Length: 162
Ligand code: HEM
Picture 1 (cartoon, rainbow, N blue to C red):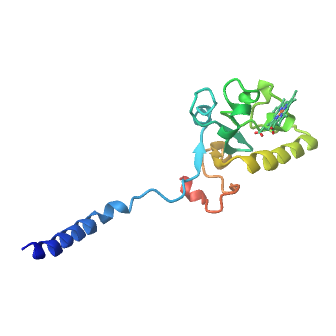
Picture 2: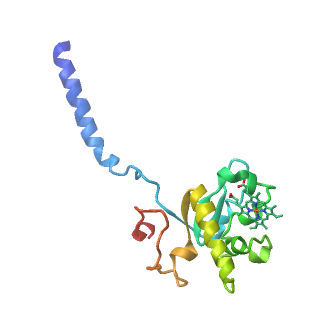
C-alpha cells in the first residue's frame, strides 16, 4: 500500500506545482526598474530620518548617497543638497538656497565644466543611480521626452517608465 502511495503523492505534488505556475509569471524582475522621481518624492529622501536612504539628484540623475552620510546626513555639511536636484549648487560650489535647483541658466563655461567633473568623478564614480527626476524624463506637458538618454543603465528602456 505504502509502495503505491509514494508515486501517487509525487504525482499530486507535481500537479500542484503545475497549477501554481501561472502565479509565478508575476515574479519581480531580476533587476530593479529605474525609478522616476517627482519633486515631492525626492524630497522624502532628505536625510532627516535616521535609517532612511538619502538621495541627491545632479543633472536629473538621482543618486543614492547614503554611503556618504558624513557629507549628506542630518546635520552634515552638505545636507542642504539632498532630497532635491542640486545641479546649480554643485556647479557653483554653493550652498545658497537660491542655488539648490536643477536650473543651469547663466552658468559660466568654467562652472559647467566643474559640474561635469563632479558629476562624473564624484557622483557617478561613488554612488549608485536609483532613478531620474521627472523633469529629466518627461517634457513639460507630461509626455515622454524621447531624447532622454539614461546614464549607466544599459538595460534601461524608456517604455519601462510608462
Ligand atoms: C570651506 C569650504 C569647504 C571645504 C573646506 C570643503 C572641503 C571638502 C573636502 C575635504 C571634501 C572631500 C571629502 C572626502 O572626499 O573625503 C569635500 C567634498 C565635497 N564638497 Fe566640499 N568643502 C567646502 C565647501 C563646499 C561647498 C560650498 C560645497 C557646495 C556644493 C561643497 C561640495 C562638496 C561636494 C559635493 C563634495 C563631494 C562629497 C562626496 O564625495 O559625496 N563643498 N569638500
